[in-house]
Image (tube, rainbow, N blue to C red; front, side):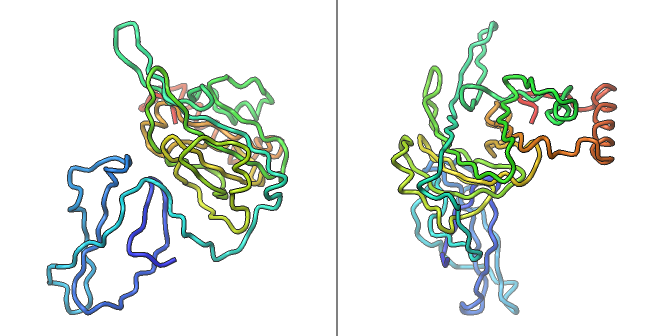
Length: 291
């Protein structure tokens, strides 16, 4: 994949090889916020630069100009993984679970407006007093509704997900979201700018799709992902825009809890340390969603 520019969403990473095949000198390396595409803005946009210099030209001020490109807030589509892999069930066997994202603007008693982001109508609210893994440890499966726990009890199973942005309440606030999953790389099977329907499964890529842990959910669009349950734990999936996470845009995948060794020494010491902190005089108190 050769390019003169690269889209980088919040939390995404790339390994980049820069070919030093230009005339010796100094060159600008530019970072530009995609403000006209809905990705946010920066007061210093157009002047966010560093300098790459060839040996012997370190004191030169670059005169290079930027490459032309179309601003956008969507992932790269030309990526081709070097390590070939495929999603085995393919088009015929994939059963997708849909997760919707939406905003809620709620008027409080004092007249102020509180903004929440929700998945399937529920904003995540972590419980610092009783973390999710404490439920696993005690065998309690009565998770609070707003902990947004999605149970994945079966080990080694491929799971398929579509995340769809839908209209908010009372106003539609349509923005892109960089979706990040802990505990896994997922397979990016496809994305669109419209409403997901099952007939779109035939358009997805199951043969050597891109693998990453952050992918863009397009504005008013959908994102199709897959991963296999091979890593027991309570794994957060959330928007990587920090205030969207603060406002609740997250779920927890509780993966094969019967394989989580909740009595391992490290687990026990971490839980003890956490409860000592929380039940003492904690310096940092929970706010917003708690994640």
